[in-house]
Image (tube, rainbow, N blue to C red; front, top):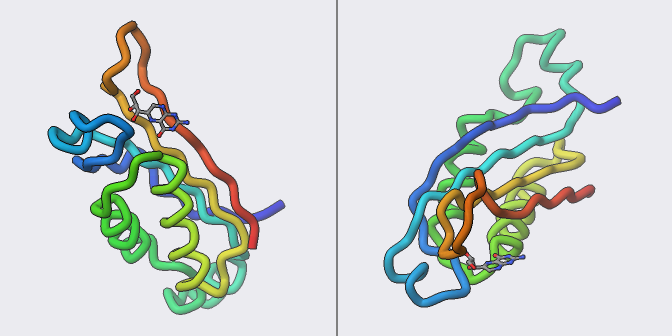
Length: 119
Ligand SMILES: Nc1nc2c(c(=O)[nH]1)N=C([C@H](O)[C@@H](O)CO)CN2
């Protein structure tokens, strides 16, 4: 069983979407991320260098959300690639991106995607 670091309910105003109106007007995106790695060393040494700094992860996700893409799949894939290249300790990552108010008629809490990548 793997240990996890999570960042829940991050909100970004970004411009991802298939439709021109989404690229022009933008909308709110909610991102949840789970990073799986062994946290035992950090737990025993109390040393930030022995783990992944979730403040730094937030900044990387923020940067990734700023670059417009058509598909949420592409946004999530870009972010996971950056995380794996930056953190050698990272073994698995899950990234979920939700649009609460996309241009789709109907009643729902949100639509989106979730990816799970293993190094
Ligand atoms: N699997 C996906 N389907 C759709 C996406 C997406 O990113 N992944 N995006 C759209 C539009 O941009 C959406 O916001 C409104 O229809 C459509 N389907």
